[in-house]
Length: 164
Image 1: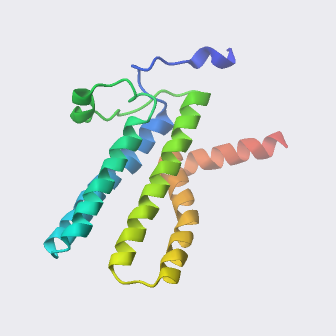
Image 2: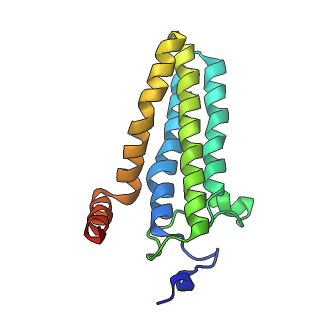
């Protein structure tokens, strides 16, 4: 089988890793932003609640940047169709770049949100910086387990070990 033969059209289902990223990370993160904003509205922190609602638009922007969502209209995006599965096979270069950009964007958005919340809660700048740096490895490990799954990670690891 040729290396480039697994090309997909933009309207078809996304790669399973991208579909898992959208379903397991972006969708719950979007609901978490709404819940946190509601919490701060309930406690009369109006400015922080509005800031978190504005930051929640970033999750939608990250989701629209995924390759299978780029050419959808506003009404299609508002419909919120989540793919149940995804296509198997090798991840194309375009999909890999889009996924890495989405992961980086999600990480920066979560860190910015944590910065705003911790600043509002009265933490000192050095504790905020330490908390943000401590989230970096946790985000990487969480991404690997949520998107790829533990069995796929072990399979890739053992495949690399056998090649050596």
